[in-house]
Image 1 (cartoon, rainbow, N blue to C red):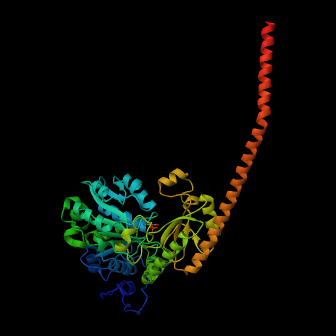
Image 2 (image 1 turned 30 degrees about the vertical axis):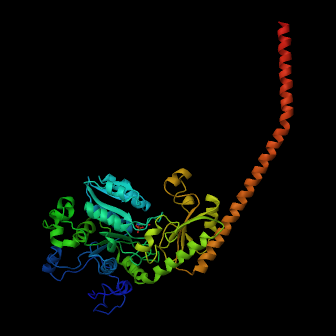
Image 3 (image 1 turned 120 degrees about the vertical axis):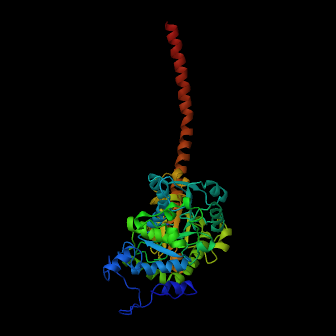
Length: 483
Ligand SMILES: Cc1ncc(COP(=O)(O)O)c(C=O)c1O
């Protein structure tokens, strides 16, 4: 493993944590496809188990291929340690479970990925951990929501799917004041665009499945320990890092490992007990992606900006949402926090609602309709006809999703080809809307015709009614006379 240090992310992503190995000189990071590692002798095995020596025991805890990825992610985010897990969700769960126990509390941004919201709202609640959700744009409310038993504040640097930008320096200031760590899911940004730790965050989580992998072929997650939170300042608040840990001879992680206490506890407890290990094969695939991240992200960002501008000027488009646009609610934060661009996800509304949106999706040839983001290929999703199709318009509105919303994860194909494909989709949407308008027009015409006919026939009816009334009067008179 390499001890060299480098100036720039592009070099770190290619070289950190690995030098050609001594047996065969493999230049690429080898896939250590093994579950376990032979001990040199009994004493060596015992020393590894007693944490007296470093080394690999079993791939649920550590694996040399995974370790290279971990070292590169720690270096890229400026952390003191990193633990990779099987998916982004397992990284989130592992982080929450390492810091919180039954009776504890989390403050989370409301504008976060749906599965993370479900984890916090429902799953963790089942284990006695409560979450208060607060508008990410309301710093004062976030500060107020922090309670005595709050163990962390959580947000996404760019929210999924609303694309809200978290003001990390302000949130970090609140967290420092309240002495709680700030945990940031930086999946939509990647370390190529933004480093939350440099802005004061304490822990960074990534779904490696997205832009970092880039190929859409492997799931993975990473937890980066910033090493910048003083777990020992209020030891009673963070018992998992301060109290004696019986399974490891009663050590205190903070006393033993100092700033790296969190990542050591995650490795020792969560990886051992929860077992959400990243497979060496997936670590290898994710490393291939990471090695070219510094080249890919600028292209993602450039294309997203061009697509956003092009959509904005299109007749079939009702609205466009991307942080690069001045109309975006957090646009003022982009220049200071995301000078290299605020990611490659954008959303827009197709005129004509749900049907036009569906027609747009079906006409696409290049952009793929699926539930993922961050692939090098352009991906699209129409929530109203897929993920949110069971919700009525009111429920969707509450979730911040309109019937016409299309989410685009802009890839690194040529802008010309992406634009051509989206243009075909928008033409199909326009045809659908035109047909619907014509249908509506015919319906209106039919209605007008019907009303005209009814009005025309209403007079005789009135006459008839008048005749009937007269007849009735007449009959009544007759009857009365007959009495
Ligand atoms: C912001 C964010 N965090 C976490 C995840 C979960 O990642 P994974 O699918 O790798 O579990 C996702 C998935 O879409 C996401 O968008």
